[in-house]
Image (cartoon, rainbow, N blue to C red):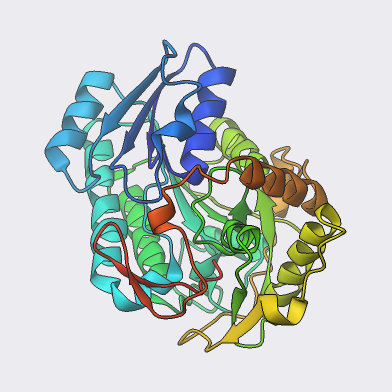
Length: 362
């Protein structure tokens, strides 16, 4: 099997690429990544010389490049993860998000159709639901009704990022219905773990606290988020790759949820336990800032359909957070310090030409 992983040098993509390369030595894993600011070649150093691994440096908007990869590598399966994912960036750079996340997906879909791939898995997000979640049972009923647009269709994105992912989902579904492309969509909760660029709340706050800077929280910090450890997410992709039903949408989630404020307090406790002789002043290390233009309160996913395929969460929140903290403290210089987050809430220049606000929360 020849598998193309787009965005394979990013956070989740690199973990997935490593997993597939090691677990399936007779699969060929082909990674395409444009090496944007949140990608890192060090992420895949342990498999870079593997016989069944190959890396292409390029953009998913480049049809000629994609076409040649599909042709030369005889791609059977696509795992499409490449996307701009930072919500805050999308408010000020929505056109770039649309170009990359929607048009880029269209290019990959067109190449997949042209080269008759056997399976196309599109990695979306729980944020397409907006504030209103739907259960797997409702999704199954929607599929049974031929995907009719009715009350059960509750994709209600509330920011430009989630809108771009929802739009790409519609393209994926259209290619299945119009051309018979064998597609599957996944919608996952927030993922955390090693290799994540420190712009999302967990690695960012670890990075800030390690240098004695305050964690900046949108609004009241009461917004709830569910976090799933990256290895559990990769396990879900593995099961969906081999057992997922064509045309289905699989939620990948966890029953655990925590407010942004309580997450910050938990990290402060963990830092305090590692430095018992150095008291942490919580009041000075938590800074509340203006909320986003729209900030969804929670994403509470029903993932029974995935459980029916045999998936189970293996890493608890406490275990995953401990692993993550240990990795970042041991790899504090992993990222270029010129682009690490600060506690400044003003707009900063981004290495790829984007501007971004430094008080992001995922």
